Figure 1 (cartoon, rainbow, N blue to C red):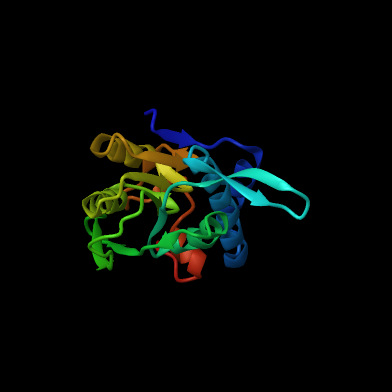
Figure 2: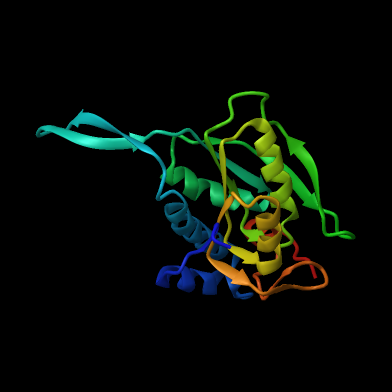
Length: 211
């Protein structure tokens, strides 16, 4: 699965320990998600196209490079909102487009409820943000929608993914690059990642946990 990059770094492992721990408080959980998102974002953008430019420092002229592509951030509501601020720190000129999905608790499949993408103006590259890639259903829906919108290239940034979810996305969209900090082996009978970290949205926003 050559389009999947699992990011290996001591800081990744350290912050993963924090987000996995059931005793981590919401504020520190959010901070750890923020830090992991920065690390994922750096890896996911390391091959972006740049163009040369010349600027003037306080001392002399200098040759520099600026991004050549238009980038859009697409958080999958609601958990994806926890990854927006760190990615905008890295990409302050990026636009943010929201797609809202909720999980049908009987089928574990995503249901769309919010979509305000315009008919034109798609970015060159869209970074889909979702801390948990479980069944792959939500990412599938979002990738398909972004392709229909006219996005040239789509990359998925996640914190923890299941092998099953990765297999599904790779099967349906073999050209989509996926960046994760951990790949867990299985889903339980409620389609939660095991061992995972629970419900990322509930833990980010300090709302009641699912059982």
